[in-house]
Length: 402
Image: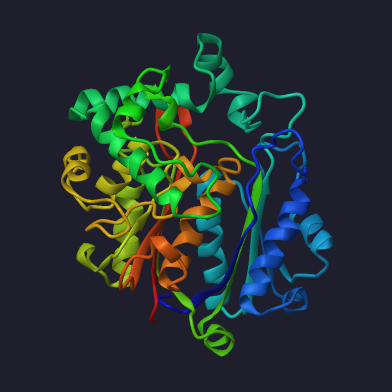
C-alpha cells in the first residue's frame, strides 16, 4: 500500500480555553468548522463526499455522542462508508490506516476524517476528565480510583517513576523537550501558549503528581481538526502538493514481557514503527522530523526509543545530545506539540502530529519550517491501561513523493 493514498487538505480550528466572554461552540460546530477548512484547502466541497467516506473520531470528554451518521447529517452529505475510531490519541492515525485500506481495495476514492472535543465546556464533570469506560467501570474504579490514582497525570506519574528509576532519566532532560515545544509554539500562530520559558522555569514549576510537573502537562482546550485523504491518482489531479502515506504500523494492547508483569517502559511503537518503516522502505537517517503524540515529555522520549532512533533507555542521552529545534539535527514536535499547542481532548489531540507533518511536507510551516523536509514520521498514541502506556500505538511515515 506504499504511496497509494495521499492527504490533500487539513483543517484546524482556533483553539479555546473557554474563558469568560469567548464564543462557545459545540462538538458538531467545531467539526463543521474544521471540515470546511480542510475542504477549502483541498479545493473540494462536501458534495465530493457523497457516496464516498467519512471518518469520525470519538469525542472522549463531551457529553455529546457524535455518532458518525449524525455527523454526516450535520455536514450535509451522504457517505457510502463511515469509519469510527475510539482509540484515544491514536484515533486520527488509525482512521488514516483504515481509510487507506478502503481506498487501496477500490471501495472508496476519498475520505473526510473529522474530530472535535470540548473538554472545557462540561458543566457536571471536572474539566478534562474523560468519561471513557475505564473511568466508569472495571479496573479503574476497582484498583486505581479508590486509592487516589485520579486522572491521567497520576497514572502516567507511576510510569514515569519507573522509567526514571530504570534508566536514570533526569528532570533536566525531560525539561529540554518541554522547553523546545514551547519555543516551537512561539512560532505557531495557532498555539494556545506562545510565551517561551527556560529550563529553570520548567524545574521551578510545581509538582502535580511526583515526578510530573505543571510544565509536563498539556493545556486542555476546545477545538476541532480534520483531514482529507484520497487515492494517489485523485490527489495528483487536484493538488501539486500531495503528501503521500508511505508506510504505517499499528499495535494494540501491546505487552512487552509477561502479561502479569509487563515492562511498562516500552510502548507498542516497538512493534508499530519497524512495520511502518519497512513498508515505507526508509531508514532512520531518511526521516527529517518526528511528530510524536506528546501528552507528556517522557512519552516523546519513549517514542524516540521505541522508533529505534536510539536504544531502549538511551532516550535521555539522545535528547541531551541532539538539537530538537526545527532547524536542529532532530526536529521534534515542530508545531509546539500538545504540550504547548493545546490538546482538544485526548482523542482529538491525535490529529495534531499528522496535521503538522502535512504542513511540514507541503512547506507551509512558516517560521518553523524544517529545511528540505521530504520524509517525516508522525504518531498516534492512545490510552494507559492499568499502568501500561499506550493501549493503541500507530506509526505513520509520510513523504512528498510516492
